[in-house]
Amino acid sequence: MNIKLANTLFNDGIFSELYKAGFITAKVFTYREIYLWVQAQVQTRSISKNQAVLEAGGKFNRDERTIWRALNSFEEN
Image 1: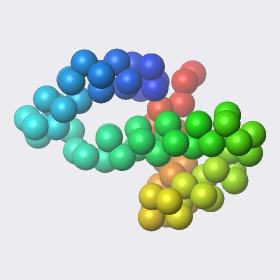
Image 2: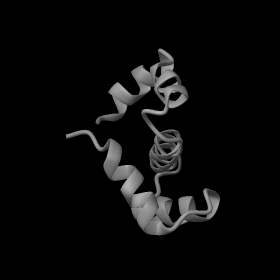
Image 3: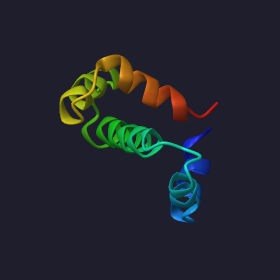
């Protein structure tokens, strides 16, 4: 799934409805937040993606591999 589609689903409330119905887990929301935060850091601070991933691990209290997994979930192809 690309981030544009995910943002549309989020903004339209579809993700929330799917979550309430039990079709998706809270992980989708966390992964989206991580993806958006990392992209914002890369763009606004001009740091490398690797550096942003390291910082995101601390900010979100997640393993570096989890941060990469979140990024790969929403990469635009």
